[in-house]
Image 1: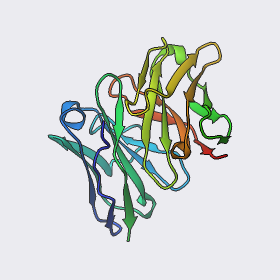
Image 2: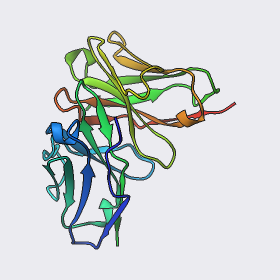
Image 3: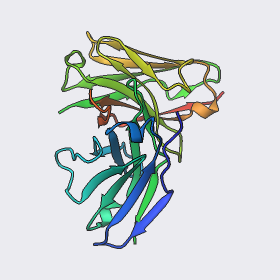
Image 4: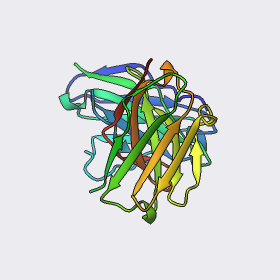
Length: 110
Length: 119
């Protein structure tokens, strides 16, 4: 069970869109439509932003969207705002009620 | 509102056993969902440790399986983590969280507790 691969950092200006990728294998990302994304601000617990590839929990702005193609999932944040600056982690179901996280991506809003 | 709160020693000696408890309020563990532990070493990413169902069925990260035990106490509405033979590499913030039954995404998290392994 290896960690999913994410870019270490991405950046964008306010109002722009950014996309964070998350690459796994056919045993995790590619094998199930169960990818989730978490936002983590410094010193805080992670917050669920997307689940089941593209579903948003109640209260999460529709600026956040998720998708998947093959073994790679993506999180897109449109209309970037200063408060979106945080670390983002993907997570995939890997069968038998196990999960695997990505290494995390630091989003900087310029 | 579902709330989770971790508790336990903040300092554990090398080779000893790390023990943490997660108290759940606002939802009965017996009603369903899975309940998990995730950790985050200082400055690093998240690592899933394992999860438990209210029935007691457990699921562990293969890399930690030999050292991890997760248990549930439905009468106290809490679940626990034990990690044996700890080393400095086990120093991390430990989170407990609720996992959806399908897809296993973690929708509610505790605030996390820092456990340092040091003599």
